[in-house]
Image (cartoon, rainbow, N blue to C red; front, side):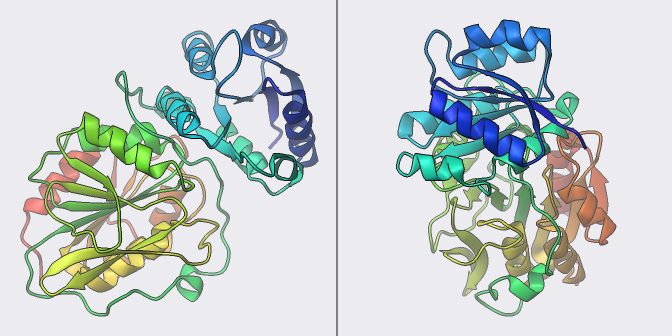
Length: 367
C-alpha cells in the first residue's frame, strides 16, 4: 500500500529526521513545514494520506490545526509530541479531537530516538492511513485521552510468550461479573462512547488500551471527570467492583486474579507481547483462567491481532464474548482477527456495545 505523508514540526532537526525515517520505511513525504500556517498552502497544493503533527508550535497549536483539518478536509493525523505533563494533556485533547495515533518524542536522547528506524513512526503512519475516519466518534468538548497508534503483526502465538496468569481456576460460585475490554487505534473516542452509556450498576471493568507509560494516568483522570463510572489507572491489588473501571497503566501488563471471593488486578512488568505492554492477550488469558463463565469480553477497534487469542480462550472458558463490527471500527484489525479465530460469539456495532454488556450482565451465569 503506497502511503504519502506531510510533517509539521517547529524543529528543523526533527522534521529532517522524521522525514528520513518515513522515507526509509517506504512512505513518500510530500513536504514539511515549521508550523500550521506555513503548512496549509503546501497541503492544499497536494494533500497527503497522513499528516504527522507536532503539538506545541508557534502561531497555531496542534489542536487548533487538527480541528481545522477535520472540519475542512478530514485526514488521518498522527500526533508527534514530547512526553511532558503539558504535552500529555495537549496530546490527549488532540487525540480526543480526532487524531488517530501518536508517537512520543523523549525529552532526553531525542536525536537517538529520531534516528532509530524502529521508533514506531512508520507503523503509526501506516496504521493511520488505513483508518476509517467515518467511523471515528466525535468526543464531546473536553473529552479524553490518547489512542494507540502502533501496529501489531501476527507472530508467535501469545500463549507461548505471555506471562502465566497469577492464579489458576475460575471461581465457580461467585455471582460477580467482570467485563474485560481490549482496544487500540481509535480507542480514545470509541471507549468513551461505550462508557458514557453505562452507570455504577455495571460490573467491574478491566481495560487494556494500548498506550505508553505517562499517558494512562491522565487518560483515566479525564474519563473519571466525564463519566458516572469511577475510572482509575490500575494499581497492583486494586479491587474489581461494580461501577469501577480499571485501565492498565502504560508500560505494564495487567492481569486479573482472585483474592478469596473477590477479584483484584495484578500490575507488573514483563516482556512485550504482540509488540505491546500492556497487552490485551495477557489480560484476557488471566480473565479466562480466573473468571471463566463470570466474564464478559470485548475486542474493539485496533491494528494487529492482540487480544484475538485471549478472547478465544475466554470463550472456551465459558465467557460471553463479542467483537466490534467492521463498519464502526476505525481500524478493523483486532476485531477481525478475533472473529476469524472464533473468539467472538457476537459481532456488535460501537453504539450497541454498552447495551450488549448490560444485557449479558443481567443474564444468569450458565454452569
